[in-house]
Amino acid sequence: MKDFLTIRNKIYFFIAIVAFVALLSIGLYPFDRTSDWFVQENISLKGYNLFDLGVVDLNEDFIFDIFTTNHTALSSLMLGNENHEFTDVVSKWGFNHNAEYPELADSNTQPSMNVPGVYIYWYQRTLYIRSYNIRDKSSIKGKIALLSPITIKQQKSAKIDITEQKLSGSDLKNTVNFELQGNGLLAIAPRFMGIPVSFNINNDLPLNQIYLGIKKIRPQSYSFDLPVLRDRHSISWADYNGDGYIDAFITRSGLPGSIERFRRLYSRHLLSGSKEGFKDSTGKSGLVETACRSVQASWVDFNQDDQLELYVVCRDDTTRLYQQQTKRWFFF
Ligand SMILES: [Ca+2]
Ligand SMILES: [Ca+2]
Image 1 (spheres, protein in one colour):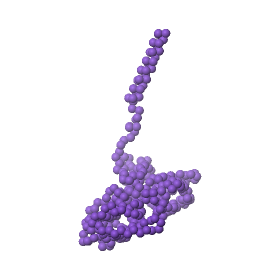
Image 2 (image 1 turned 90 degrees about the vertical axis):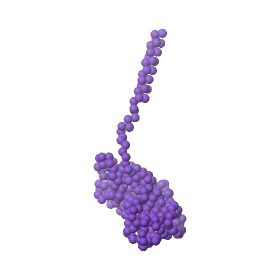
Image 3 (image 1 turned 30 degrees about the horizontal axis):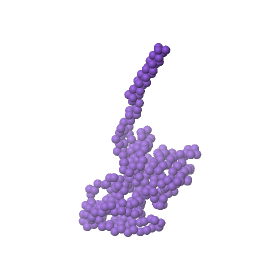
Image 4 (image 1 turned 120 degrees about the vertical axis):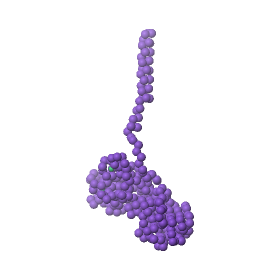
């Protein structure tokens, strides 16, 4: 009996030693090997007001490219190469909020003011109008009309006169007559970002001294509208029309939950790829319905006819399934 207990104790002792060694091994062995899987790369992406970030192979070279959506702010479209370098092609490929005014969107960067003129730009959800080094002029006058309640955030060497007009429903139109003197500044924060903004600048100032956005684009006349900014959310990528170029459907929202009030002003947004870059094909596609608040859409061939349909989830508790027909038109 004594020998049996001794043998049993030896077995327990052996098991204990094995368990101890096993536990020690578990503690010492680096089971998490994922640290070897990735190498950190520094990529300069536009992160201001970021909503979404993802990867896509834009040019089908089997190298991932990177995109961001940044609500009403400037976004990134970064083309990758075999050296792990990325080049921003947003403007080159026509992926701006508006192709006519590239890089005229909200951002946390202000344009450099190094030549005389009037500078108009969005900066941190605020519309800035600044006069810089205007010579031979006592002042610059103009008028701005916005379909939104507004707050004057900054006013320096600027006289303003604001008229608020009630439109149908609960819509408001604010007209701001302004006069800037010297290096004047007027900063207007509309409650609704992305609404239409109309300008009329006094023609005493040479037209080529009016600069719009970071790229300092010159308007074609003294009366001009800033492009309606799209509150970009997700991007659904696919070559929906089978021409060999990837296309993009961009969901959107806007106007802090008030897009339904202004739905008449906003279209959906479908950009078709081509060898020259992306082109707005929303109207041609038949996606003529006005936009809904949406954060997600997906391309799917739901009826297996080898043509992609577009499924859009709207935040008004409705969804849309746009079926692609023979002439690349979508029907709802
Ligand atoms: Ca690529
Ligand atoms: Ca295509």
